[in-house]
Image (cartoon, rainbow, N blue to C red; front, top):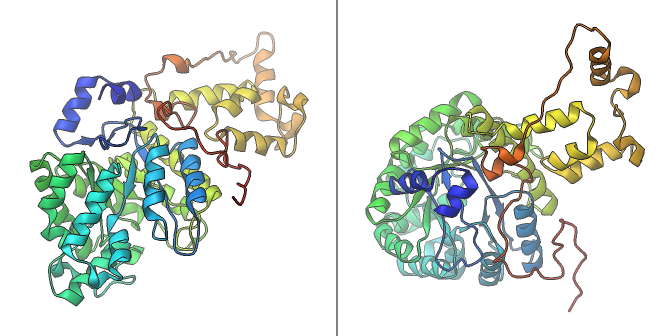
Length: 466
């Protein structure tokens, strides 16, 4: 809690109160030794999660470790390992070993693989897999315990049915076994495992809408009511809880969704995927969702789950992780600025001052993605001499508005005063995530990275075959 308070630039007693009241969570498994603790709650800076993980057809341990490093490097506050392919234990344990940020998982994926299919899962197998993840050091788990047998008929008229992996798996299990959701039936046993290892619940939204046509429907809100019930049960067992939120929601319904979750779940932190505000842009869904994420953060969502350009199309690679995180760090920061978090806008002001002063190097240093900013500038004006120039290639020297403005202010006895501002970022009240650079985690407890991972960037050399 003291480390969290330091990173948030807040009082440690306030952190304690928020966690005690269930209004914030600190995902921190006792066994995650490389962790730099962080907090998720609407009274704190808006956080961003990055989903990584392999599939049966794509990525391996080396690729996943690179994606983890890329996510942390570009500012992910947590990562979720959604692997469904091979080497699940090795990938999960490696992610925990090398991650300074909390690691989340969805244990039902592994349970399905071990059982040979959704219908073959047993209550005992689910509990065994959940306990194994906890013992391996996972900090939070998505548990789709709110999908009930009586909710399934409510999805019949949907355009896109059940789009959550976990939700669809459980729906098939319920239909074929004609029994209640095993995660709901065994929820108190799961609470006992989580309490022992200090694992945080991320209560999954298995009936979330997968299209605008299905947003805010009866199925979604029926599950939400159950999630509110489960939140209180987990609190009774001394277990931390956050609640996952919808994926596709029209812009005008986002604030209503956030407010409803806060009411139903007694203020438990809300963790939203997007939401995507339109369905027409495959290949650009990091943008369609970042628009919704900004609005969700402004309305009180505590953590935003990033979406990459590959959403709906394929498994993200390193560059997709980078693009998704850039979009969502922008969304989270914009929400914090809009909500008036102390010092959040100082970063913006400092960069604006550097821009007006044509201090190109400081602009690059202050940029969310410094390398991308410099690469864009140097594509047309690559020489070092242009780092001192009072123009860029957009307008050139003759039509640069800020140069013209500066010259006008410099005229003797002119009408306009000169501008002389300086924002002191070192004295800013902002939380770490609202100050440059983006990926500020204490990595002193993280083991040395393997040679095939470049500690300075995201384009390492390929490892040897051996």
